[in-house]
Image (cartoon, rainbow, N blue to C red; front, top):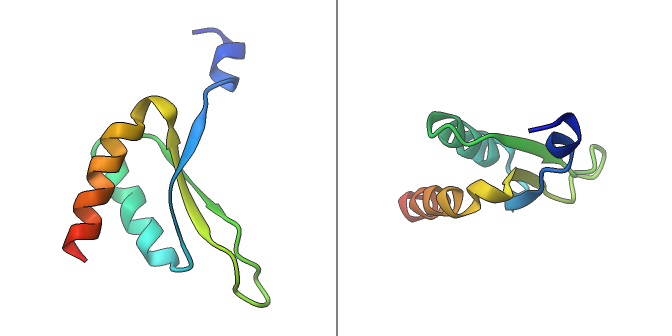
Length: 75
């Protein structure tokens, strides 16, 4: 894979919530399953509206969705 191809990888939002701890738990589950993920905090710091989102690579979205569903079922 060339440098340019690496920069063109597509990421998809897997999950969004206003609760940071939920996104951090999901990120750790992705790490345990060797799925690269990134947390993007779109929450306004003064008013705390908006979501905190977890992104995964498009190639990993199906595996990540299965892990997400298991996480949501256990809540």
